[in-house]
Amino acid sequence: MTATLKQATGPQYTRILSFGAARGENAVPNDDLIGPIDSSDEWIRQRTGIITRVRANKETDAVDLASVAGAEAIEKSGIPASDIDLVIVATISNPRQSPSVSAIVADRVGANPAAAYDMNAACAGYSYAIAQADALIRSGAAHYALVIGAEKLSDVIDPTDRSISFLLGDGAGAAVVGPSETPGIAPAVWGSDGSKSEVVAINGTLTQFRDGEVPWPTLRQEGPAVFRWAVWEMAKVAREALEVAGIEAADLAAFIPHQANMRIIDEFAKQLKLPETTVIARDIETTGNTSAASIPLASHRLMAEHPELSGGLALQIGFGAGLVFAAQVVVLP
Amino acid sequence: MAFTNDEVLAGLSELITDETGIDGSEVALEKSFTDDLDIDSISMMTIVVNAEEKFGVTIPDDEVKNLKTVGDAVNFIVAGQA
Image 1: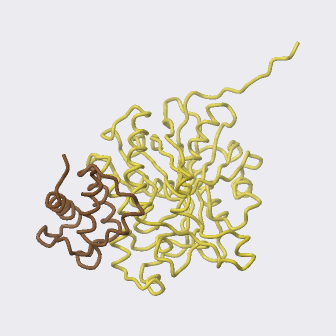
Image 2: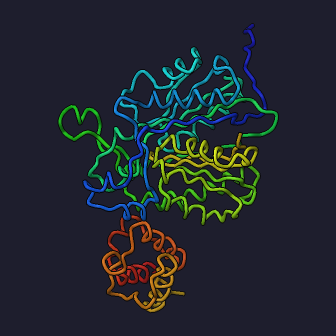
Image 3: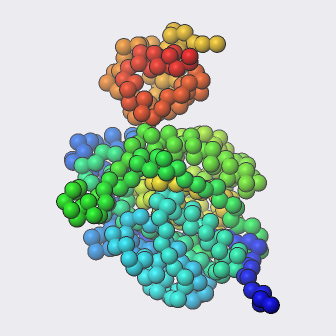
């Protein structure tokens, strides 16, 4: 007779316990970027809402940024680093594909030998990783998870590009996820549309670069097409996320969208008909677009500036290259 | 019921005013969205999406870049109703 296997089960609920953040060391104002794109401070502000963006020193990499953000999140969580048994790093910009960012970060923050892996869901990466951490803890596969979005996008920009480069910044944002007595992370509404894979993408491969066929590959986008998708398609996803969470827009203490562009954030908020009481994250103004790091960085800033939001509901939604998207409602720590 | 050219122009003019604050009297068939009305690509896309809803037509991303003038947009929308 075949022996019966044991299968793990976990706690019924999870929540975000804390946030951590690391921003590139240098504030880069619009005036520093306008020469090669024949533009102006006003042109950039009007189209993006960005005044300055943060960029890291040459010797600072995504692993460094992720380690700093991760260490802060662990410290604020009150959970010993040795209790973290899962580390997920969402990133698209680490120029060294192997080893993973996550394994090194797990070791640096004191969580060795946690399960650790990187994931590529671009600007939706953090929301994807929160969904995974929630699922893996509730299944019993992990107990405490460190989720990080980390990017050094200044390594994949072209100063002469007028489509996206001038929006981008460097940083890492982190969250610790753990078991909860009450519901703290609602189901994710997530998905992809690979038929639009070229509207925002790196414009070449490393082998093409090696063979001299293309210059150093950098990020590009078809701005207007991305704008339409990011506002009107993502508004549907956001409304679905509210529905599966069993709440309404009026219940939201905060709205924390991917910090892609202020114009997207403004139009998105309009489409969702958010009440005036909902605080909208606008970290992009001084941080820029940091892809996978933008939602946790914006969350970190929001909690620092509005500590009264603690315990309130926040809708977070990531969307970007793939195309991929993920939205969920969370209880703010 | 199909919209006439004049109705589409009037409706489009309202959408342009709502998005940009440009006075409706400045919106005319021969005006270029970028050169004459100074409408950037993001505002253009907002107007396009609102026009789709208002007139019940579909304006694909690839088509938007061909709509150089207000007249181009009116013609596309009127033809698109068929």
